[in-house]
Image: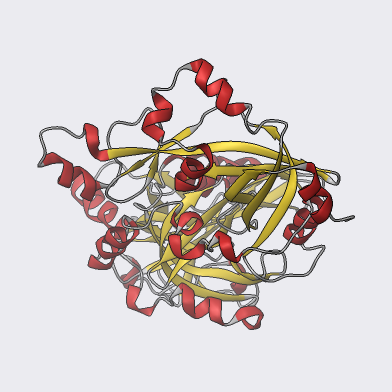
Amino acid sequence: MSEIRRKRLQELRFESTNVVVVALIIGKTTPRTFKSKRSADTMAVLTFTVRDSKQFFTNCICWGSDSKINGYYQKYRLGDLIDIISPQVTPIPQSGREFHPKTSTPFALTVNEGNASIEPHSFDTALATEIRSLARQPIKPVSLALSLADVSSSGSTTSGQFVDLFVAVRLTRPVRTIIARKTGEQMRCIEVIVTDRSYPAGMLFSIWHEEWIERAEKRWKPNETVLYLIDVRLDYSTFYKRPVLSFTSKTVILEDPNVKETQQLVEHASTVSLTSLDFAPQSIPDPNTITTVMTVQQIYDRSDGAIRDDSDQFTAVIYGVVTRFDLDGSSRCFSKRCKYCKRITSLQQDVCSNDQCQMDISFNSSGLNSFEFYFDISIHLTDHTGTLTECRLMNNFAEAALSCTTQQFQFMKASNRTELKWKFLMERVCTKVVVKKKSVTRMNLFIMILDMKPIGLDEVAENVLVY
């Protein structure tokens, strides 16, 4: 047998044999199994996308027994350095191109069990350091990426297309387990909201790949992690009435690319509160302009689409009874935010997670005054058609309704809080609200109370609707 020689991807030719390629895994597919035509054995195929320089990357397609291929899948993870030993250098198959990432080489590497193999790379420290540094190097210029505003403006005309996007993670939702209709197989999915300068509202990005789900859960941080999405699928969601993104077997993700645009996007993202779109002053109407009377059922119907309405929010006047208003119990009445960037934080957090705010605070002797508390009270409103459980009485609207500030309330005696509660609990009220529907950035209906006043039975009778 001829001696095996190490070769770079750029040095390979179709006639190359007895070579070993040292490469970094930047992508991998889930193994696909099938029955062998020659025996009753179960076979499998798996593709790794690998690179060994800034310019060159290719697909390594592994064929073999189910146990062998699944062994590769479990053993080698994204970011690992591997030796691809004695692969065949083959033309890129015409069939199935839509299932693999587009690469910079005119060939693919084929690893057939028994003739070639994959091993972890461990003997050349200098080479390993060089190739590992490629993990954050873009495989194509980020200037070629489209903006989210570009793809959003295309509406449903671009469904099924693949695009390149340079985005920041805005938030990640909890992983969901879904049962496939055809096979009954359980599948996991994580939904990530991504944004850029052009589209602060954010776009939904769904990932079904187990290892990328794990990375998104453990590594991606809101307003800090930047992703270069290459060949991400774009579809139009009839549910959200806007484009959405999804990861496929041909998608490549680069985390925090080592380019100046990454830091620029992080700096921009850090100025956008995770809840800024829900609480932006310009999105809150003047209560005096709200005149449309609606029942609880009408609000739910309009929010869920039973009553057609393409707007993101609407307003309503509700005549009903306050059936939940826990001012003196265990329920939370306050939330906490940074005074500088207005980012919402946990009540236990002492330092804002925004790096810029930390720098500003460091010039002061103490950061104790860098946060502010605001009312954030859950309320249930009930009428003859049902109960609204998503209402919040917040900010200055709560101070106006309760006739006290957050500081006054914090130092209020428990007996006084109870007395204040019973001014509203089980009483008839006229409430003006702004209703924000579910969206890619809001998993639940959100209803903000802008005005709430106790009223008499006569006023209720004059304004109550049958439906």
